[in-house]
Length: 439
Image (cartoon, rainbow, N blue to C red; front, side):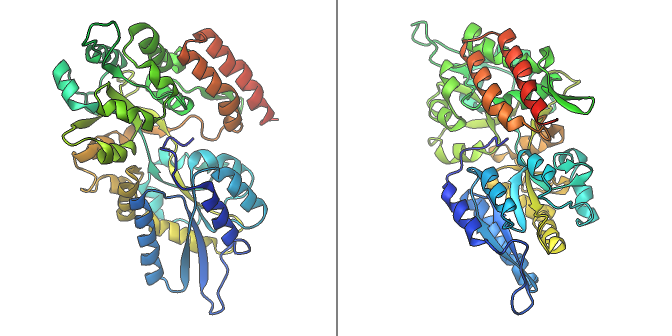
């Protein structure tokens, strides 16, 4: 599950990159005896690419016997490209991906178990909740190093005009209070019966990830395990946030109906124009906002609402990861390079380049991230509340998402079906798909 803006690098870049390492998988030794590791990076923002390339240069300068070759890839169709590379014995030694894509590769035996290869200080610095996103059958198949929660980005002037209480990570809004605030922010200034400013715009072009991950805030899970098997569940705790979104669109009129077909980026022009007071967006969208906001436009970053003290600010995430191909003949050298990339100070650099949060506890405490500017401090304050996305480790999830959940949720949010119909499709049809992967 990739809850981030669409990558601007063409898919063909990755295809060419993998062709470029054909025959080189497993980190060959050069004629002079030096090892060359292939590092497939999916960094795409200018600052992120620069940070990755700088760290590769730093490694190569300090480790002349184990050189790293930076290979630029793309997030587009990464799963299919890597599957082809794995099956052809041409996978890069070090692979940048995200936790939602590791399930099939780990179960397929394509990724090395990093447990005996990583230093103890790295294992201790990253919380167990993050490690659990890459742990399968008792082995660690990736180092989770960047994570991206969902936050509320809000128009400061509209919040001040409405006189609402500003939430903090320590005292967040409840979902009920969020609904009330959305109503106060919604205005029909010309009296034509149509809102000129909506309290919120939910970008629902791709509704599955946010629906599932935010269900944790009300005690939901959507995916559960029974007798060692994955099942889809959609009880009231699982559906509470989806029902709220539906209510805001179709009953309260506080959420823009136009958001149904929008991506996060699509909502930004309306946000800058004052048409939407708040946007639930992934944390990295702050970069686009900082770059595209009109002069003088004042915005703030707020935590997502809470389902109550027992749930806190829980929400699901699928961290970005660094893995080692099982076919690599230099697994320890590849793991050493990953340990270098994920040192706390390096995670800070990579996080700032991607406008995301590091998983390292030491990195989260770095003064560079303890700043109010662009909402960094809000992010670091909610990091401890983040939980593994319920979809992680669920075999068959991609098919369930594409064939069942996406159209079912789009119909529900659009008003074409009711909650009972949504529940039946997600569970009855969904479990038939999951069953095929668990025989």
